[in-house]
Image (cartoon, rainbow, N blue to C red; front, top):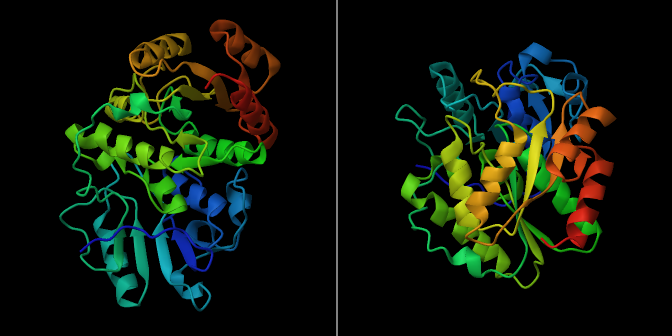
Length: 341
């Protein structure tokens, strides 16, 4: 049996488990939930026990202790989040045994991994990537939306698209723009309490699933604009399908491109990254017959945050470039709020 995660509430008490991967990119779900979920109060990872989360991963927005085992968690902890998500998202036999033991001990376990035949079957095992309920074919209805819909895109996976959406949401809210965040992956879904696990939805229904979420968000009178979490990259040899489904299903009015300046090859795959100018041209061409979205600006991560790298990108594309910092997001939000998006 599976269930959907309920909307996040600080009254919950949870820890995230990372199996020695807390400092790795494969632990990015843990990084997201520690940063944005105040009810997550510990990391369980014996490789880093006794240290703090920000001591191991300095860019996190919050700091929590790291312990070696669930036996060290405070009384009242009710939920364990599996914080690792390697390519393909499968659970090992060892992980399944641990999950069964934790459920037997009374915990609810939340997994962002792809469901498989060997998974534990229990009402206490929450699969974020359970996608059977998404069975609607897209209708192209997003083109009639009049509110701004901003889709995060990137030149690779793991370039900060979810973080950019969440941070821009906060920065736009501070500017007086009421925004909705539409999650499209397991981490964003856990943080926000709803969304579409787009990489687990059957291909025929992927655009329809995100279309439904965006329409629901724009129909809310309390929402001025919608920010959609991006996935993959349009030139990615493995993950381009989800990128295209999001692009067509959300029918954005604007695109924000997230780039790691240090990355010359696709993460995990070793293929050279496609030139950013070509990325921009293709994304805008694919958007032309919907709402005519263009890449309004770039949000960049990486150590090459120097004036030359940023100036080169701005010169090549003619678009402003903002760093993935609080000030960068504040400036990007002001730019987006004043622009045509």
